[in-house]
Length: 242
Image (cartoon, rainbow, N blue to C red; front, side, top):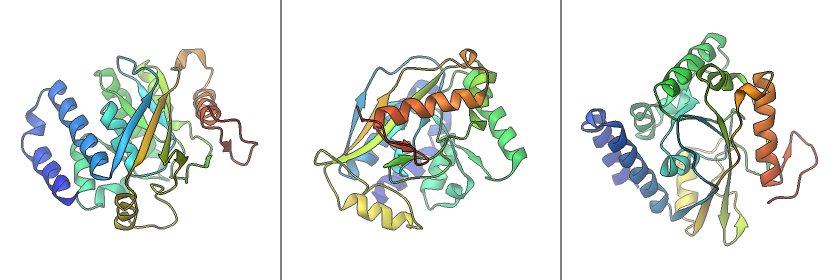
């Protein structure tokens, strides 16, 4: 894994900036697939991958979430600014187009919304974790609506993505990056539990123009993911999973 991370750093510091977009996409998909493989994990995708620029909205469980989606469709993620300081991974995320946000600063949110909208208008795909932090995957936190303003301004659809991890056909909390766990501790747990599956389910897209506000749009994405996973939101009664 360390060698692969070092290879990634070498790529983003040398040839990656000079590759055409299609080639960058291929490299990012290969590299992300390899991360999952080195963790003893496979990717399972349900639903059809839509074409064209859009914003993916996902529930958030692990540092692996980014690589699971990038193995399917490399995207410009929004991540907390602390990730920029992570050894190797921070540099990789930065050079791969991640937009970092300083949480709690209102002006920072406006800047990120503008950057997201601009990149999607240029034909890129974006991805956000509207819960704002990770969970064990057994519930959803309420979705924040602010970043979905970018989809409204760029006039692109929103695709909810339901994420869960399996091990021996049971939902697994091993990848969950929670409760003050260090990145090294989390990576060690994952690597020592081979045979896991990262399941991504692409749910029907939402069109911003059909919603009166970004809050209604966020609620629709939240409800779609909650319904599919069969988990509750903020203590509500869980639905039956699909």
